[in-house]
Image (tube, rainbow, N blue to C red):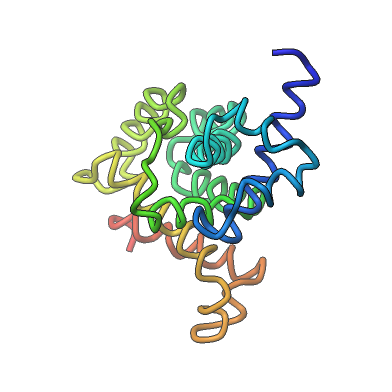
Length: 201
């Protein structure tokens, strides 16, 4: 793909992610995306074939942009497995801060029953085995419960970061505004660490 075409496709995806994140699949039209991206509607169909194809590509795009585990974060965790939970929780929180549309796209993908999901990428697949090995070392050091599986561990960490960011508006009113400040987030992470360190309670 030529550079100009690549940039146009990237621009369409960025606009589509924003609009799908705000209005969902059924609340967004190809015409609206074309207007906002300042491209001909036929260009969108040439790249993505259909509105469903564009939604699927947008979802993959936002997941790819997520980059849960960067090489730097992985190296930090590898050097200090005992801090794995703290490192990952901070990284997952940072993902949402870098991409505020991330949780919205995931929510819409789960709400849109009639929209088929594409073959989604794994949890940063290229680092999966290495991260799992670091988790095993953390478990040997009693930094995580001995009977916890890697999949459950990742699920719990992702759940905390997803719920924290996707429910910020309601929980800041019904629970605590302070919890959603920078200080509150640090406190949340530090106290969550205790859930994974039963031997230190």
